[in-house]
Image (cartoon, rainbow, N blue to C red):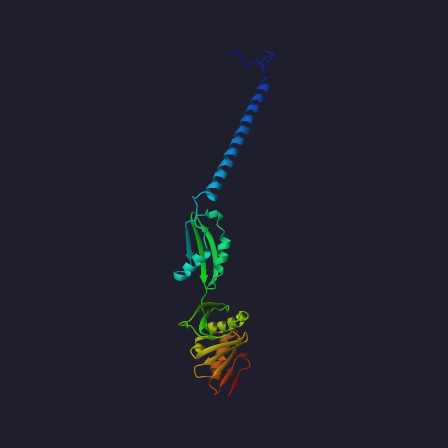
Length: 249
């Protein structure tokens, strides 16, 4: 069989044949590359539509971790989760900001749990004391923040007499920190605690004597000095500067 010939009737040289074959392979590769790109773009577009616009990943459930009962219900309500919206489009930052407005919570985070759930993780504040405010009571934590207003005195919490003004948070924090850090050897002797300022926290002992405790620092040393001073008769014991204690008759 005779080989292929050119337009002039002559057979192409081996070099020309190889060049033609390479051109055909190059065209084929370009076509395949274009097809691959088109297929990839279509796949990405389909995935974007599936995740961002279809109801395949529509928000269906809001789960609250770290709280239960009434508080969990309030968290879910305040979060205002857009049920039915594709999960990828839910503004988790906005949800977290709304939940942080609840004073009972120390920390909040919101995350997606594919394919249809939002998880709101919270850490409730821990009450250190109860502060009276007229006919109501406030819970207070070691940061001095007020929360959990109630009309009845909370059970099983020590009472802290401290201002409830917005600018008195540092004073409340000092009083709460003193209560939280009192060694058990002194705590059992205390009937009430008051905070006048960050550096002026006072203990009223069950026998009526007053202890000028000062701030929350050096609690163990102050307790040690106070227990020694109690051997002396007095109405007021000052351990605010434990290296220079005083007993006032």
